[in-house]
Structure formats: structure tokens, C-alpha cells
Length: 133
Image (tube, rainbow, N blue to C red; front, top):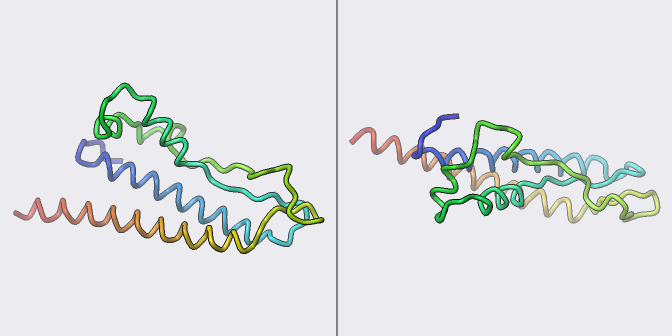
């Protein structure tokens, strides 16, 4: 990853896009296992991890906090897959996947991923315009 103040937000959006892609994959897996007895729904946690890292910094503004994040350490800022409500059974076969909910979550995650990749492309386009001037 490029390490420069100019690329801090792009690096952050890149990490968010990676987490969004992981969540899309996880939701697809939930949909594929909707009829698997005993399967428990999985989800991805990223927003909470990012929020924790941004609020526990010593910096006063968002720009400084984003600059202080370590984008090269995969163990610090990434999406984490977890089992959602492992003791909850949606059906008699102990599966807790609601197909309607999964389809809505999947559509929403696709929109989020598209927005992130569009924003990253737009930021790179701005750099391209500046360098041509």
C-alpha cells in the first residue's frame, strides 16, 4: 500500500472495500446454506473495529486519526467473520438464516461496495487531473 498523507483516505476506503467484499462473500455463503440443517448465519464486523481504532487515538481531528491508522498491518484493520446469534434457531432444523433478510443485506452490501470503489476511482481521477496541470 502506498504510504502518503494524500493516500490515507484512499487506503482507508480500500480496507473498507475489502471488508465489504468479505461481507458479500459471507452473505452469499449464508444464502447457499439456507437449507443446511444446523447452519448458523455468519456476518462480518468492520465498522465497530474502525470506530474503535479512530476513537482510541490521541488525535483531535479525523484527518490526523486516519493518518495514524496502520494500513499495512492486516491484523489491526480488517473485517472479522463471526457467527451471528449462535444460540438462536430460526427453524426447527436449528438453522438461523432468514433468506429474505439475507437478500436485503446482500443488495445493500453490493451498493456499499460500488460506492466505495467509485469513490476510490474518483479520488485517483483527481490525482490524475492535478498531475497533468
